[in-house]
Amino acid sequence: MQAIIQSLLDTDLYKFTMWQTMLHRHPQTQAEYSFVCRNQPGYPLAELLPEVNEQLDHLCSLRFEPEELRYLRGLRFIKSDFADFLRIFQFQREFISARADGQSLVIQATGPQVHVMAFEIFVLSIVNELYFRRFDQPAALAQGRQRLRDKIALLRDFGTEPALRHPFEFFDFGVRRRFSRDWQTEVVRTLQRELPDYFKGTSNVLLAKTLDLVPIGTMAHEYLQTYQALGMTLRDFQRAALEDWVQEYRGDLGVALTDVVGMDAFLADFDLYFAKLFDGLRHDSGDPFVWGEKALAHYARLRVDAHNKRLVFSDGLDVHAALGLYRAFANRTQTGFGIGTNLSNDMGLTPLNIVMKLTGCNGRPVAKLSDSPGKTLCDNPTFLAYLRQVFNVPSTL
Image (cartoon, rainbow, N blue to C red; front, side):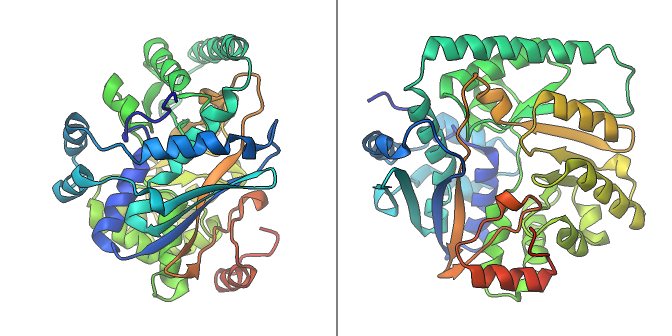
């Protein structure tokens, strides 16, 4: 077996930041995560089952190495007791299962959230790399390298345009849907070498450590969704999640995700207190131009100077889309662009649209009411209808 995951740092930074918060704030939470493929694969994913199980066995044998823990301790927002927890942490195989259901691949992780939440990115990386190993590797890599050269040329041409008030900065967000571990490494090394003025970091903690890049990330949907099941009034879950984040990080990691129940419902909770404490907002669904205008209008209503804030865009971006958004907003606020699949899996092959999402906590359902209809996630239609009612979200979303 050729192991895909060889280091427990080979994951997104926000897994660690959410993990630390849950360990400190809600360590007793039980959680359920489920794998979903949203598009039609080129062949049945169920065919990968034996290899997936081999890779999961290997994943559950790994531990954090001393030099990896030293790196994490060097990040000022990582607390010493969390690093101590990671020193003794090991995935438990009994908490994750993979099986075939017809032609579909079913993967579920169930157990204490602080023991199962980190499976997500590793599972997605494993499935992706196993899936794409069956395609013509030399042809895919040749196509990927040409497309990467085209992106670099596009950004160099962009550099001849008149400067806007705030600089263009983009980041690699490609771990979860990458063609392979080695290809993501090649892409990030190339961007670091060729575009140092624009390329400012990666969400991949291992690559950030290895290449001396800034690790990028704060929170994901699962963090806010968890608070839907923690016993407070449902209407208050966003404020509770944001408040715990503020108390945990005291000014670090200040970009808030906005689309767990939609942008309008988020802004209703994002009052002056949070607008001043958080550095900015992250877009992950819906029309990004509409979202950006709503964010700037909200800051204006609160009399918060948007030039001191940042709008981070991360929803299915490519370089063309990122540049279009930059031109629309960079004279009015700071921007950042997290590009995932289009960097780490633009190979002339159709990428898998796979996720492994939180579906329940403490025996209760949770949901994501996305601003993009296809991204709404919930296994319980009754809870979904209740969530819509509480936050006045139309059924079209």
